Amino acid sequence: MTPAARLQATLELLNLIEATPRPADALVSGYFRARRYIGSKDRGAVSNLTYDILRHHARLNWWLEKLAADKTPRLRLLAYLRFVEGKNPKTIETLCGGGKYSLEPLTNDENKFLHELKGHTLLHPAMPDAVTCECPAWAEPSLRQRFGKNFTREMSALLETAPLDLRVNPLKITREAALAELQKLGLKAEACRLSPLGIRIRERPALNRVSLLRNGAVEIQDEGSQLVALLVDAKPSQRVVDFCAGAGGKTLAIAAQMQNKGRITACDILANRLKRSAERFRRAGLHNIEVKPLTSERDPWVKKHKGMFDRVLVDAPCSGTGTWRRNPDARWRQLGPGLETLLPLQASILESAARLVKPGGRLIYATCSLLAEENEKQIENFLATHPDFCVAPVYNISAICPPPLEEGVRACPGLDPGEGVQKNAPYLTLTPAAHGTDGFFAGVLERTAY
Image: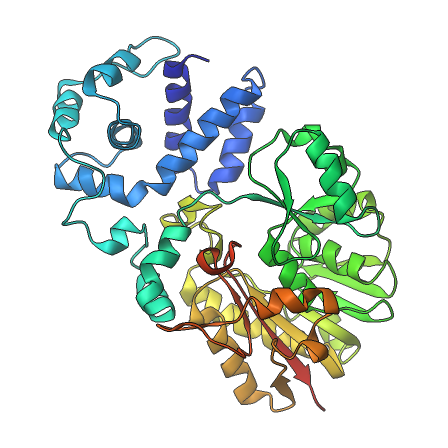
């Protein structure tokens, strides 16, 4: 593709994302599936440019508003070329040559807009720091309360491109052997700092080149998500429930942790996702997993299995604020329920799933959110009405975590609002700035008696 054709494809994607109520990653994947003639290098270049423009959404819109221009994908693209790529108006005009594989020629108003940007940089002294950090108004108060003086640092980290993290399947390969295989492919692979099963690749390879992914020896999973799965501390002889299993990423990790023994039940209300996860389980060589679709969090199956499980993981549906590095469009597009729906749903799921935990068993509540109302406050509200549960602090390694996780958990204390790191935190709180992972929260609750 020519540079002009790449820009045209980028604009088509930006328009599609703005007009379609589906996640950007799904839309980008579908766009390229329908255009298999586009080569891998061009796909990578167009995807990277699309996502980078999404990461600059608020700052570009601020300039459009300041200059009384329409807030359209095309004008955001033109402003991005001027500000971020440093192209002058003449170069941009050349790229907009019209024709089948090029952007339409610049209008007089667009030419005027580009010239008005001359002499300015993307960041303006009058630009609010919430705009600078691309923080939406609906999340700003809670995130400021959580991070205090570290707000800008944490929000800036959420603007970075997330690395590709892999989790080794210990039933098939060691981390050392997997690293050697990946390095043979010329990939810059290294051991993750916190997860004993994690591998980080600081580039975006063509995944069809990686045979370890095809044969289930490794799985794509953020390092933070790996730590949450390890925190379940499931033993080979136990019965475990992954209550909101989704596509089965944490189910896979827990089943391998159990050495393919015992029994783990993957539940979700989205039966099709569970059905698709069965192929992942087979590829990983795991046969201690059963799948159970639920009609809701109050499905009769829950009552029937009251008090029968040693571990119950609730990876609750949430706002996803911790995944903004990977899903920059989620800041500005409400693709699912808002907090007014999520908060009562999380409470209901937690309360219902708790019925499955047997005396002495553990209930692990986790989200990929950085908002206290979805995390600590949910646990506090739950404990206020469930005196038979208590917090089992994550820093108490011998009681909660398998030995390989000790160093990781000690390196991942909770964040005290305004103060940064808090030692001996009861919960696991991970952030991109502090730990280099996606944002995650996890709390472990132990059932003492009925």
